[in-house]
Length: 432
Image (cartoon, rainbow, N blue to C red; front, side):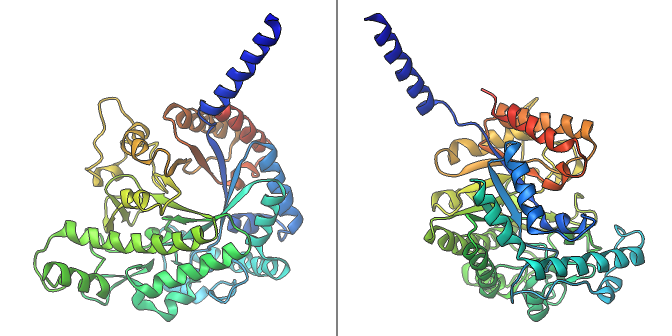
């Protein structure tokens, strides 16, 4: 009689463990379709898409994030964007120190984007990745760039037609080119239209990313230079009785809060769209009180744009299903000068930024909004990549995050040994 009882107890124990043990961290890989197309010697095919997705799945990936932007162009079949191409004269009119040889850059990107146009004529990249991911039993989230709408040779049709919808200085005429201002309803409407197309192709949700190549371009270094669009000016006047364009001094915290309110409204509208289709909204969340953009270079202390992160409101209103914390920041470099421009982040002795983030966000988000790390930029050399991936697996597990967005798939295709590195990372990430 003892054996059946023992066996039953073992089954009960196994069920209890399965029920109450923490889930293994989610292994997410983001796919920058632009690199996938540009860096292959021949035009990408649907077969290439399927092969890549199968490789990612067989090496432990649970979820895909697929990029749906290209420096202002939308690189797929849509009337919301110019067709894929490259504007050489625009590039010459927007030189940057990052591009050491502008003419070589123009020649390269002209050829690359000609190839890209051929790919889009052959198939619709986001749709193909969504279908391939679903065929492998994976979730596929479409990645929208909110603040990445201009780079030399690349132009946004929407912003060309509506230049006043960019972040603007106090003079009302100096714009941060390529940085869309979501205080304007028309800007929010544009992103909702983009999200509708991507969801219609079967995406399981939308990620709003704060990636911004425009921060590389020459710019003012004046702190908080931008943020004076008419909707923000009007909202501040209505609430505080002050015209921020003419006042010598005003409450900057209240100003940042209003700009943050505009972002909440954007996420609210996108969340309503996603949740109405039983799909998810993920939000890239910079650390600390503010999302801020430093420029020239992009990890400097020249903070020219800033808005309050009303992240608790996104949790309380069930708007955000997931945050990618430290989105496009350098959390692994806590002593970098970049962080000195975020003095509200106060770490305990011996605490790194991952520990700070766990302490700041996890209790409030538990059971409501998932928290994923961002792997930052990865090396292509196998030994260096192996070391980095061990670090990210251990860091995700140590601090109890729900998973990690590994950036990006091309790193694991660039060398024949690297896809196996991804597999070993996944085993380490999910080890019992």
